[in-house]
Length: 234
Image (cartoon, rainbow, N blue to C red; front, side):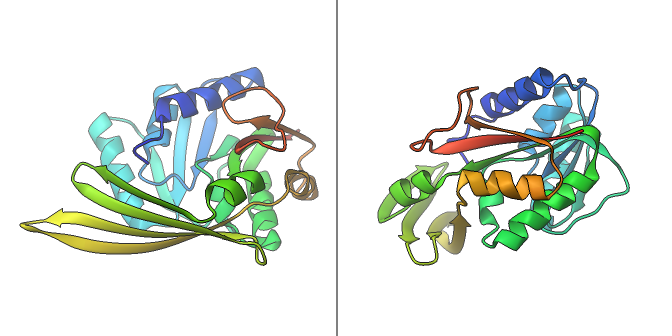
């Protein structure tokens, strides 16, 4: 995530929230919050933030960041495909193509339904997705080698045109003493047609849906790489 400009990204989301007329001190749930960088930025912007993630290791890192920053953020373990909460939120976010990790339509629909139920009315569900164009053009047959803070990473991407899954095999060499520790990860994403995404959101109970080219207010186009979607609950 070294190349991600978190301030620009969360600033854009805040603009969308303000554009919708949602007050700054509203309750915000950041799904798939990772190590909490975006959650902290939302909290600094004045929102009452909670975070959920499937990885307890990431949640521990997020909690440590919040404590160090003096911010009160409640982090809890949770699966975006099936979660419920006693609290109600005015805003739910799910950023950094986390929704692309839902490989089945029923999983995507379930996540949308859970978000809809966790929102108060009115409420906003804001998330971004890699598009089919992005995964077929930029993930297929791509090899990258990166170096950051002594960590060397090798990114091998491919796209399966039968299953429509984008695959990433990631190998990292992390400094350990005089040598390196090798870590291997496998990531898989899927992009649904944006019209299908809108249909699933409507099926989940959202009344109004907007789809923008990421970081803009322009409508998404066939060659859009990342789309940001706002689903409104009345």
